[in-house]
Image (cartoon, rainbow over all chains, first blue to last red; front, side, top):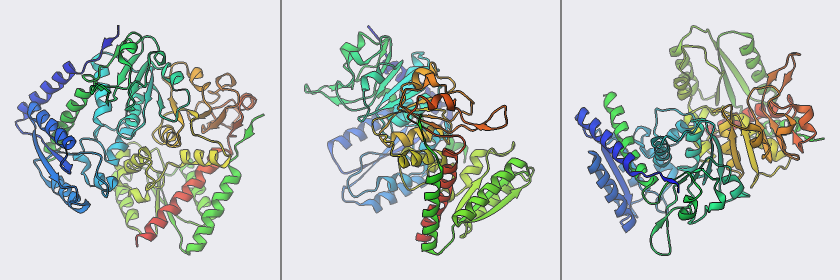
Length: 282
Length: 282
């Protein structure tokens, strides 16, 4: 049976590091959480961020605009948050409702406060391996998890299934910058199993429950599952047929409890980093 | 024998389109070419850009700083060029001499005039497939050449050998955005031939003469050679063993005469595009 790549101990470690650093500095990083429209999903999102901030020793402040507030009001709010010295990170729940230009809104966030790494400038920094920006939390979390379990990337073949702007593409680039050979697959890929079966490290983020079956995995491969899907039984599952693939892989992330908690920890770490840069520049 | 993917006719076509559009608009796009230090390579670079601008109906202006001018003077020059209404594109010969921060200098170029697509913002736009920026000239040239010869990308396996910021990585992203499955290989790739032999479209940009031999190419593959290397005989060669691979591939770019001229044409096209956007915003 494969070794479980669990996020819990790494998350605890990151939490302790963040808390210790904040205690040492004696100042509190602040995260603004912006949501548009009151709905249960948005509320859960805000509450989870509040809870994380509390646990890590950060200050959180949430801002809820009504769905018909309009783009101008959202841009004005972001403008205010960009100016505030006690706010170091700005989080905007996606997707935006209709009538809001995602591009315009994201561009408005100061790159130095863009802890989710949505801004073009931070995307550019991911391409050039420039450490002066922020890395998107999920791919950065995957890298941290692989490192935590001592999984080497140099010369390994990483196959990424999924090519979103915020997960698949930056994940491929982060692996490339660690000298892995990288393949990016997606819904138009012909012969997906032939590709995935070559992977030393297989990473999937498709949102398709049960997409990755045991016959698509090379014996001894490391399997990282970023997918979050709700099964017919109401429970959360990844993209991977966990039971069957566990019998083939050397390492596998559980869902939930694998990449997810690390992603949340990286957001806290990014916010601390944003605050430290701001404090250094004062 | 493989069909030659020659750049000449596409280059002529782009040239005629650019000239016709400039004639129609009745205004002249301007390109600034900045070099630091007088040396034969820099001089050849400037002269080739001047020649292209003349042929395409653009205005070129060149600026030569002495090697010990220093970063401040270069930044001041770029600042001036950013302001000038008759200059729409700014080209900076790379690499910069020692003592100049590449990052700082590139960031100084206004993204709207960054026709070489070095700026982080334009790199970010390559990640998100945002057409509002500029694409790096070489990978954009390769895509134009593939299109010119009717080579389909959807579902094809593109293997990119080389992973520079300005060629390999954006090339992989541009192919991905056309729904190809993409693999990026490099000097740390284990079993390069096994990877390249899977390619429906093999693109190489390594600067290693003769790296790609016939046994590394799948019969019927399309082979695009971006490499520019000088042979022991003083002539220019690509990364591909041209004679032998021509017998295996369905299509192959000659070097010189393949991607190179198209790259130069794309730079002219980007500069016209920059000018059109500037004129629209007046």
